[in-house]
Picture 1 (cartoon, rainbow, N blue to C red):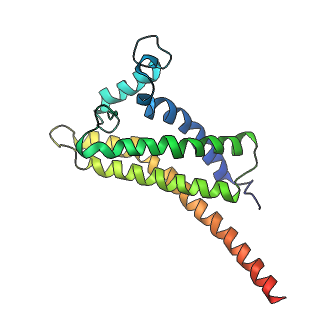
Picture 2: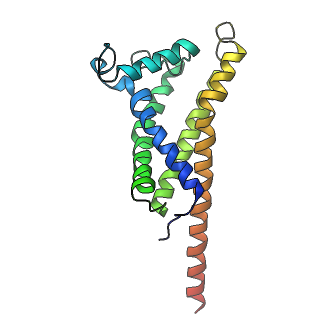
Length: 189
């Protein structure tokens, strides 16, 4: 089936995928590695542990502070979202880098379907996290802190995946229209 090779959006999706890989593997997924790989100074992933701790110190973001050990009560959903990221988003982002960046083939129908699912999952799970911010204790978090977390940290993970989702809906519908037209033409013969 045809591919979309000459789309400026493919370049945006490629850049997004490249940026996502270290975030998924080395920031969001860090707590799934053995602590010996990231906690001790001088350990291979300590730099990324430091980045995460610096962000936590600056924002006190409880969602980013989530770990399997601290999961309890209302924030137990966060672990599920991290698992989604590792099981769904990581393979899709790896394939996107391979397909768009290395092969330079554009998106195929199957790839568009995978990106559609990724776009929905990433936008939805981030929207849930953003919704949670509105319920954070106003005595602990100022409006300025909440806005920084909402708009500087989380908003891109709603906007770009939503763009991916909507673009893939459009591409898949175009494929369906072409297939329907071909089927109608075949029946008309």
